Length: 494
Image (cartoon, rainbow, N blue to C red; front, side, top):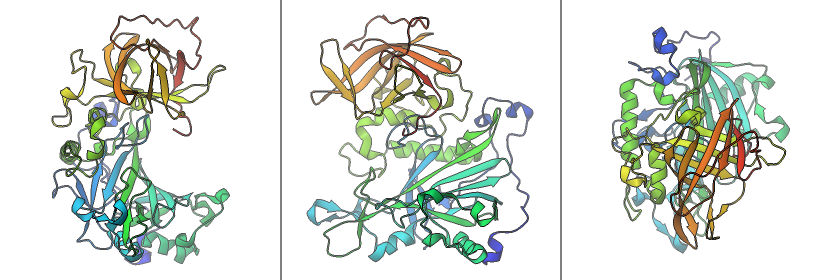
């Protein structure tokens, strides 16, 4: 492609088809729509027909080769799906260069790795590339900073693209594409590959180039996803790479994350990107997700390279077996607790530090393969079908039980087993006591007033008991322990 054809002065008209009828537009969320055609496709070349439990991304250096990609639902809360316990507002794709364990041989010293070639040439050649899903504008090329030593190329960029009322925000870009790099260098003398500014100069480079945006044509490559790959030491030749620093340390991988903002009933908001696909294409992705998250063996060998590592916690992440848990910012499920993907952050207060979040997660019971009622202790008996999750900045939550024993958990998670108008009964699961897992039961009494969620936590007990906790806002002041106030404003660091 000639540089002159990459970017053009006039913005081409882009036909983006939404829901069509006024009734659809007025529904609570964009995901109320059913699309006959793709509104905005994914920003890379992919194949959803050749595999039943993953998708294939075309390698940028050799179109005959693939990267083997798994993905998580929009709004996911649990590893391996996401590290954002408050509900991630983007879909996370995770790619492997290895087709299976057969390409991850055992190496000397009890290590393993993938043959990335001398100087990681194979990894560079195999990685996919982001492409513009339509004719639009690049409104931001943001330099986040250098990547740590576990990533190739040691750069971290984000790119924002605009398509009429739709915005695509590409995260975790490890290197700009040759098309974008060459255009910036030829037109503005800007060499992105050698860019290493002071931290005070991090950010969007376009204003410094005298530009508010750059116009881009459909299918134009814009950047490479970051590749997590480190040389395996002590092997005698610099060709073996693993994924030190990631949750999959024995093999290199690719992090693909992006979000899409689209028109909703209450303005533009981040929505589930799969809702912008045709209904038929979305259903294909749904089937692939369900097959993938159930494709593992009890010994951890074979099956999904992505999900099998976390089989001991599959009661958590298999709850999120719908590609689009919710796109709405107005959802009132669970009496308003699930608004904005269910995440609440501790509020300011004179007697409490802002160091905790609590999340409410629906179980996708309509997923024919992903949902398994036997995974849940409640087993649908009370038809609540919700999970709950807490996290704070401390290394562990430590709680004292009735018998004075101490239980500990990093991310306490549990099932909501009873729902009342102002209270929930929770069974916290997989809490560690003396090296073994146990459950604890607790009642929470809550109130939502003026977008503030106040929760009064009852005592932890080793078996179910009648509700004993009552919340009285006139006397129950948030103290950071028994009574905590939460809002939707995110706390930095979570």
